[in-house]
Length: 304
Image (tube, rainbow, N blue to C red; front, side, top):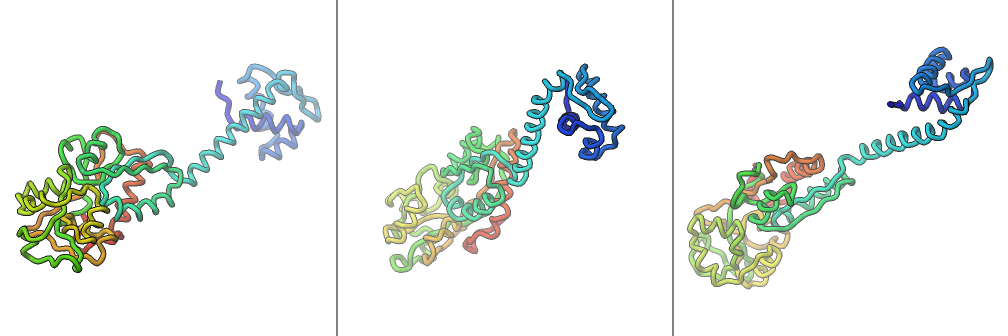
């Protein structure tokens, strides 16, 4: 049996006022229309709810028994309406997991996350720091809704949207190292910090047969961008990283020299092809795309 909110409201209001005339005024209906609506409701229920007199309407025993239920149903419907109205004011709801590399996560995402949370306070956001290989794996296995990194390995199942291109280069403080054109061409003159084997930067250097690979083998191996920048700042070695990584606030004041010949790192926004984004994940993707042009990046970084 389908009971509408209108039917419940007509019944509860008429029972409370005990008079068709006053009830019709309160409900903004004509008396004949209210009388017909009550009669149709009684026919639907198969019982009389009101005993009518010339001046008043009184509840029948069946009407008395049904009134508490009708009030509770009406209150539940009103509460549901308030709940959905609140959700509408809060925006989309849900959870979003994003796998992201340290460079993008520490340089671009903070501003995007701040704007996203202001617009969608009901969404629970989880950020997972990983290298490009791990990011691809997490998105492929649906452990993350979105990934931001370089497509490494098996990406056939992923839809990839390029966000930016950033050349690889050398980064060092002028107080400790004087970078030259020869250094950018791979002449083994200065101590280099070593990238971990599973990073996209080391894979790019291998793909291009870079002369930096041999001297990097002698350096301190670092998998953390923040530690890499701290070691470079302290004069332990020259960092080999992208112009995106060199945009980190900790790199301010250091000199960045792009490699010659140029080696570009491309960064993509990745998701599963066979799984449409939830409204929350789509809202986060939109926030990233909107904020990216406003991020404080080195001029060598090219946006798509």
